[in-house]
Length: 206
Image (cartoon, rainbow, N blue to C red; front, side):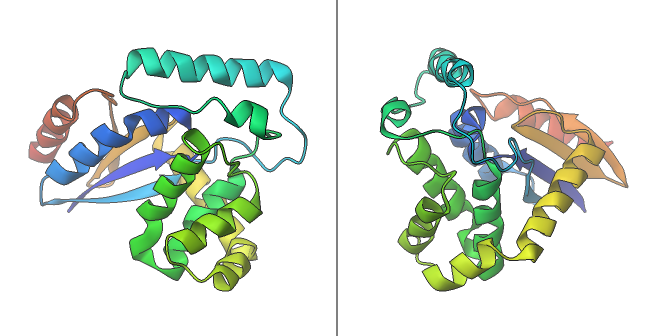
């Protein structure tokens, strides 16, 4: 059995832009290829407000993504309605907590975080917002609050970050194909699943 890993961060803006094409890819993946997601951990925990230079850089990145992937939407009110922090680990732990409580909610949690951040101008660096999102997708907020703060959740995040690095993922989003103990990167195409499927088919047949 071959396996395709998707390495991401729920607060990675390029991952948001890639989401529609990723969905197409996963819907067409060959039956003999299993898939899973790994959290790569973009930015460690921080309580400090994001420096102005970083705020400008990220807003510039959003505009660049809108030009490169025209259907991608961003709500720039986020930058005036919040006190942004360069801290994505809380959102990563939220995905792990949701997965642990109910495996079927993993992608729903990722999408809820992305929509909150990019469309609703809500800050997923805050556990309060993440708990609200968990409740909105049907999870018990008390169980979620306990799980997101549990040591095992942080250890799982650290394990997934280490695994991503070992496999050679250096940016987000990344696709890594595993077969017979070896790992091969699959070049991300933001516009069409076809080229990625061709690579995966070729790797399956070798």
